[in-house]
Length: 388
Image (cartoon, rainbow, N blue to C red; front, side):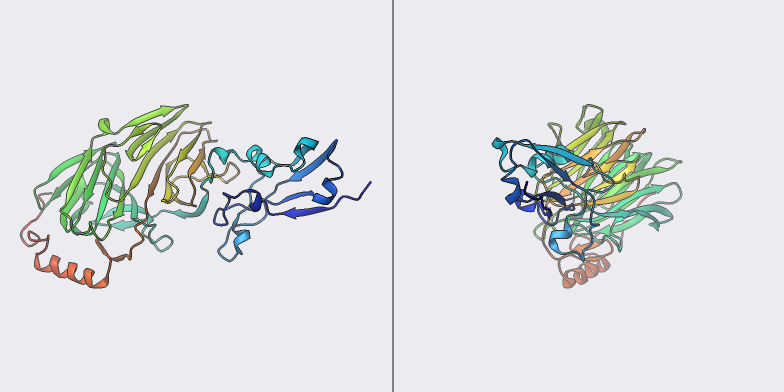
């Protein structure tokens, strides 16, 4: 009998859709092809897929593929080769070992950021996940705050220009007023989608005595939309499309999921999905391949991207790799709540000065002058004050 030679193989050539920026390197020990050709009948091929490298930006492109960590499936696999399988398929082995095969290119977790508490506004506490040193922005997203505010704290009169804010209430309510006379209260489950455009001055103050909690997302506008007239889209909780399947519920604030669509018009193409997954459930959600996307965990713990990954607990932003979908598992004994947000990158320069977001420094300087002198959208800035 000829001697058998084992060697390590990078399966990337067998998987044209597996690209280096994804976060797993599958290393397998297999029989050499020369030996294999002599033992096609009644030969057992032992293949071991195992954790190897942890993703870092210092790794060479082939090592960008982070290992299937924490003991994915795998021990040894008996693989019988018959004459009809003269060239065995690593693709088949992957489909047996990785449940994320629901997608051509599954999205994996590239970066994990804890949304740490900080003070904003007038005594309000926010957990900022995007817009901090660890994650300055994620085109087209500029900021994500998980806020908690009780009277007398809040967000008194302040301006915006050049982007949109999306406020989703988790508990309590927020009363909103702006200098154009728009006012109202959004309560638990409600959404306010505000396009600041060329300029808005407004206040956001707690509507109830106890904790008022929610998420606020800032979405950048393209250069052609930055100076548009301000606009509001408001969705009370009962008007937000929702669907449920196999213990997984989704509320579709923007985009589509489970066959239901949101009525919200997104100038910057965006998906905003709120999931609640019961214990023992899993879900596979498609995401446009060219979009950037992230997860924010609100409550519970879940496994994202790869079934062997460590669970992620509440208050983390997970930046996802490129791909066509995300798989999520709730292996815990409690419900998992999270938002999945994706958007089409604008690929434009971003210059930000607090609540003003433009494309150039000169545009920022002009915005500051407009606000100071009350012109080009801020005409009422000198005379208006909220009644809260």
